[in-house]
View 1 (cartoon, rainbow, N blue to C red):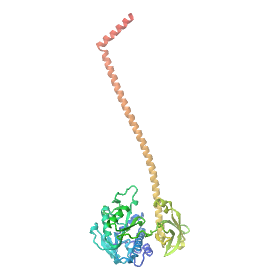
View 2 (view 1 turned 135 degrees about the vertical axis):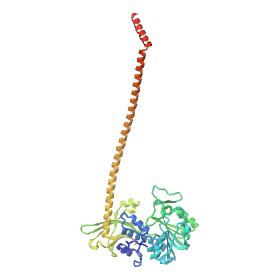
View 3 (view 1 turned 120 degrees about the vertical axis):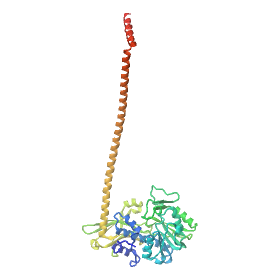
Length: 478
């Protein structure tokens, strides 16, 4: 199968593998060209930078695997305690490449609707494969599993298949097994969109897949009541349910479900990955390299201890998180985001522009999160491009504001002109009415004059005139 040509002999990928993989020597980094999760990461980047899409892809894959490992360690006591693991809706192996370093390939099953994705994984990773189906009832396997993981699957399927797939996966568990799945909580719904009364809302307007029908694979939101009622129904009120808020990539909720009743899952302390970003890179005239960005820690226990700059597995510089970022408070809608800014200064003599660096954050309980991986040269170019993009956007926004003001003035002028036109029309109408009345009056006047003239020329009018004259003479004589 055709694979991504940007992976091989890529120093960024090689650096990431050294940092992320349990065994860098046996890690399998190849990415299928058709991998929609990589393509989605690429499309999310404004500059469509392949290297940065690779960083996001591998880091997210490792983060997902780490989340699964935490849960497996707590529930089973480790991967070595389970005999069968199913990665359902696995795609082309974003997390499988990390899972296969923790559990033997013969104990790992992958399943996806894409036959090519399953083929890629079985051939490349050596795992077992099951090609999935549109209908749960047609799923071609009745094997039971100790652990089933369905990440970002139920967040995409409509209500009519949501229940049936949940029923199917639940009944593929061994009696002491564990189902791990993720969903989009109703809190993520746009404020203008209310949750459906039954607790599940499906939209076909957006989808991560470019090939699956939107009616079958869109975006699905649920609330906790819906999930708990569904699991209670499927398990006949015997199962145990536990929710980890935003346990998947700080976004989707993770749910743990086991057929065993009254299992103690609430004591599980999930460790969230650290979130961060590199905002700026500046090289001064004296050769100092100035880096700045932000990092957040959502864990209740622990806080950010330092941001470290690592070159060749050596920390060459570190700095504290001290700067306030009110912009992030507004963006994340939490006061925890206020004191998240950091700045690091590196002497030019400590690093070459081509050296690969890792910018990472570490918290007080030993959790490490990668913020960026690249060379200073590329970071500088990328941040310059981003700054130019922001500058251009600001210019466009300013022009749009000016245009809106001019549009407002034009609208006001058009309104005033329309009022004047309406007034002129009214005056013209009144003038027309006056003209009509004048013409009517003139016509009546002429008609009256004609009638008077006719009357004066009549015999009666002449006799009347003579009588009046005679009466006047008589009056004088008296």
